Image (cartoon, rainbow, N blue to C red; front, side, top):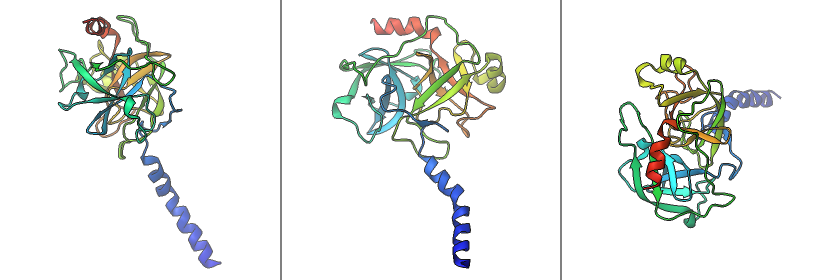
Length: 250
């Protein structure tokens, strides 16, 4: 009887560790696994077979992502994916041209936005679809419930093979600026915080409010990906609508 009690006590002491270990391989911080193909606009950007960033389809030929995702190597775009361990070769597409915003500043993440033109048009279907963008200059009200998704990492863990998602709420621009100070540019950035958030590897993915992609995942606190004192920051898409349209019609 004594041995059984000791064994139960030992198991109880290990439970928090076991729970944490099982939770580490989660992409979006404190997120949940997305229903397969429930976000058909999501794409995985990969270099040398490794996921590096997220992105999203604007049409059968163009992907929107973050300028920081251009790493100097060839990027392949994976469409229609959920579990990155199971990718069909037909869903992997090469990039024909990279169009980073000409005023992108890596040190401050200003103008952190990039268009990718695919080498071939994708077939739009139930698993592969475009997402709408806001109108030129349109703002998102503070307190709007939105969501993010990606194959990124936990703060202390590896990236996720499966697409994860989480809800987040947009914050007041003045409050964002107070928390991030000179790193936050209200005219072209949005910050948001919720029960879950974006992390390393989620850059380039969309901040979606309703059925519209209003932001591009840009940066977060380097030590804590979902930190209330420094909410995650997204490039606001609406100021760049004219630039996006110009690039897509070239």
